[in-house]
Image (cartoon, rainbow, N blue to C red; front, side, top):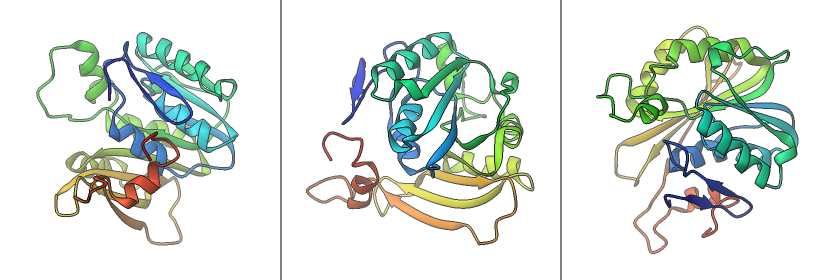
Length: 237
């Protein structure tokens, strides 16, 4: 995905001013998360605005709000939203989750959150803030979701496998897992990412467990399941 941006079927995301560029994680969770047919959607740590724009494309009856602490990302996300076909339904705010107190709750919340709590911090300060939990701990993320999610809403996020276990520990007894998808690069490789969906009340059914391989080693390179999930977005699919 190029240094200046990435063009999808119906929109373009410029990421030239953001520390974290458009990547597979954002596309995965933006395509996988369960969204309502109407209502309000929140994207926590919106960055380039990718997930917010994807949500607006998928949920035509919803308004979407993206929040981020980085001023450059907020400016770029606003531009990306405005240049998309759904700019009138997307609002981007510069605000930390801990300081975000709207007058309403959200029917769906989505996040590709900071992670690698214990890894060595990169030298670039903006990349540090984007990739690490120093500005938003998992406990703070859980608290924010509980405060902002509607009683019938769903919260979805994507994390590396090890970080997903840490998040599950932080969410234990507060958020309740309803759906999980283990993502592998190929069918025989280890779990690379975990996508999870949570509710704020105890679900009646056991969590839905899924798996997804991005590649299958065949002539098309990308697996049929990955192409099916993302076909509404990628030009090549």
